Length: 522
Image 1 (spheres, rainbow, N blue to C red):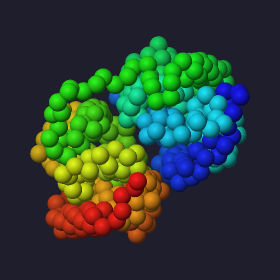
Image 2 (spheres, rainbow, N blue to C red):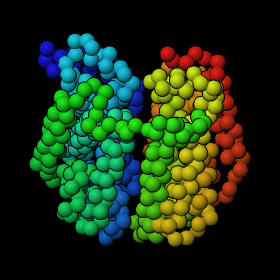
Image 3 (tube, helix red, strand yellow):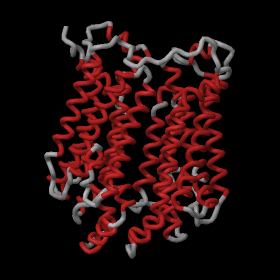
């Protein structure tokens, strides 16, 4: 029997399991890229305005660190500059989640052992996981290329292939990490840490030079994406760097996979103390999720510092561009450009915090479907007490990361401590509504629990793209974030805040009531 026997069947099974989540993430990424040309055209419609933008970016190291260098005045080049790094990040996250889910997650739950007992080759599961990630990235490349073809076929193809290549680099990286650790949670965290380091290296390199020639930029796959230079004299040879990285990492992953037993790893988890120290369900929930809380908190604080440091330079970047000013005002209010920028950036952090709260709530679903909840509930622990521990971490953790976001902005900007922290905390009711929907889906419709990611994706898309496309207010109001007061600078309105908080409480109560009455997965 070949080591790849059964790969086709496992690939079809993987694609079927991901038939909702993967198209959602690919769709969000595609729409983010394709919505940018029309927005940029309305903002920088003349060559003079684009040349002025390039000058401002070239002389502002902070904006180069945040977005990257821009190499040409064409609309396609500005699109690749504006969304390339962040579309690459999203492609990387999608890919690492796919690979870890179909490798280490399967082994940790015990399902892989059952699959391996059939006519399945030793490396079939790993191959199927990488192929599933490859399908997602290929579809992303095809959609981006087709959507941007009007800006120039060559540049659109370069951007599409670059995004797919970034995704595959981190897919194969996740495949390596999945062999090294026994925990799927740790595998996701370590790969995400490598992704964060890649972003930091690229940011430091782009801040150092205005043409991306720094050695730090070339140490990061995200830096390779910008150096591919779509729509600006494409450097096709950069794709060879991606190909070499993917091939080398895949080779390492396959070699490691052939040297260990199913369920084992090269860095096994250390055994705990003989006498348990976790006396409550809440303590267990904190122990399971504390790494995620620490990681999100550190990341949000660091991003807050970066965005806060950019605040003083936003006036120079926007200049007399009425379109850019209008977008900031739609996102952050009409209280002045600085306050509008702060409000819009803090609002974006709130949108991303909704992803945290959904992931943390759905940890309940993972504990239940993996069978780990059963021995906990077999003791003197009720369902509501078990769930409440995880929900306290989810909703309390979101409050912590938004507080640290506000503190990061204060550190970076150096002014308005009270108003900025208040602006960060006022995002919480909308974040909690998204989390409440996740609780309701898990408690009432457990088979549809993963649809909570779809809710978070739609909310993120509306908040990110809606103002730039001048979407109708009725569309913006679909998101709970559309009802929040625009702080700092705007007038505080307690009505929407209290209503959204009440809605979140009602959704959580409905979810817990459903959890109490339904059967648990066995």
